[in-house]
Length: 351
Image (cartoon, rainbow, N blue to C red; front, side, top):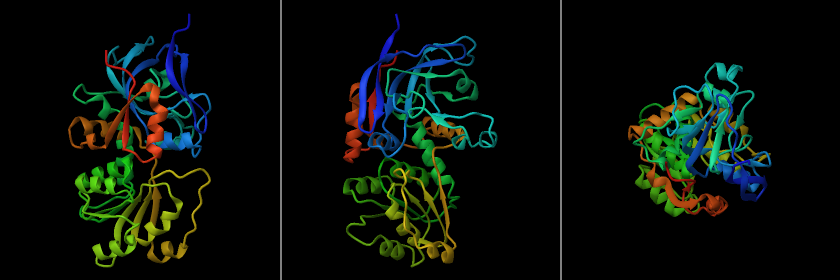
């Protein structure tokens, strides 16, 4: 008889079903993880809304931690019962990008939760090739599982700050104080930035940004963001900016907020087929540098976990609300309504 589990299976936009599916069969070299905690990413929200592609019939979810339930023959370095998290990028290990340490840019990339069955389920199977490539990472016992589940988004945030090559004391504007914007804020503060300005339309999130270390908070519905930035930077503009909201119409405003030779990171993903109308002379005559970041290399993922383990970053203020596995859809809908920040999915208890 085939053993079954409960999982949240994606069938199309706004069609997420909590249903029985077979527990994956473990073959040689595989690791089966019993998911303990997971969290909802903005990408999960975009998939649910039809703004990002995922394969119908796939279990969503890629931010998670769990314990090893079963291992196939030949697995070394792990034991049943170990707490682990999983780097969610399914990379080939042999293309140009993988060979140069940029697994997140793999030419043959797939991802747990979009192409491979993900974490909004009782179990996740990590295939043998990914076990060999190092996707499974042991979690120190001292890290609470709900914090360990945020290793992946923290890695994204570290990568998002580092691509800007910020120097100590440089000014930074973060547009958007959702979960990722606030995580970027925490990482940026640790990197030694100077004046840190946060723009956000939600007053509660602005207050939290201030508590977490923002020097200046701006609600662009109540005052001009550009005028405030200029007044805070002696009329020059900020050294760098990160766009943490997937709103194409905000890109040009971010460019205007930069000083000459400033840098912009388009950190947030945009809805499918998004286009923006830009004054290209803003980029040309100000000699601006526009870049982007998505996910993070495996090495950065591991650094993120170590940062949590060492207590160098406190993610608990971002954890808001707990949901059972059967209510993942409700947790996603709550994020759509901008209620709370990072909901915790309680997949199972440990042991």
